[in-house]
Image (tube, rainbow, N blue to C red; front, side, top):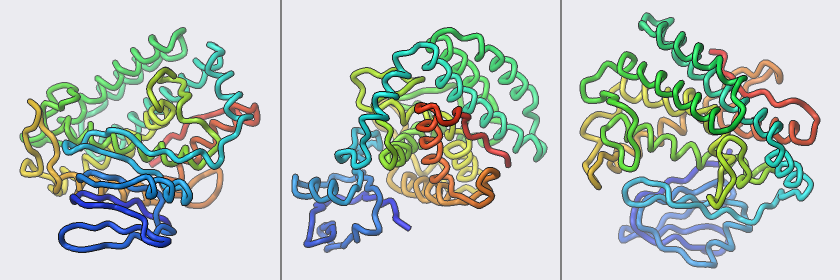
Length: 330
């Protein structure tokens, strides 16, 4: 199975014959390309055009993050599965307001249902979350009536705000109080975890879209504009609750991440390197966890489920089968 490579150290990554070499002051480490599907760079790493040509040849994506753990961009090799036929259908669906709204509603519906599943999971373990769950269900009833993407995103935003009210009840830790959503920079530790996790998930989804015929620049819920990618943001909405949020709850309940894993930067709070490493290790564990897929009658990993979501969208766009978002059943 191919792996994701995370690099935090300062050094140089280059092509050495038919493999990759990461060199630091401590020495050299070789990275077999046949076992690598994507590389995440968090450290100050130098590379050249020859490396990018090699990554493109081997169809390996390179995701870049700055010193503070913020996503700065991706090297997205020339689409090896690029299909003019699919891109035309994708663009046609985006330009048709009715079709675009249908797809966008599905993304929001999937996100809300998975929020509900997370709340139900903890409610079944004795936490008082029924009022929040009922509030989200009531707000979600407005999704079918939305006539514009802006209205739809407003409903989704209100639901997520209600959903975040559950975090303090689930976590119940004085060092990790929600206090409202804040971004760039996150103003507290819990927001730093959410922002970092969401950012990583966006790039994971981008890597899975790369293995399909879809163009990640054409989203439906998130507007297609001069931003490089948007479809990965759409699909990530469905998986945030069951991947990022569940990882956060696990890390904090097991005290795998504590207040010592954060630092103050740029008038905000960010995860330090140890905290990022711990988060990524647990998220990777979650992505490779397998669940029973009812339709296929076999187990698949969460990462595979993300790619399957893109496949389902492909089938919808060419009129083969109506798209229905993945909803967790645990």
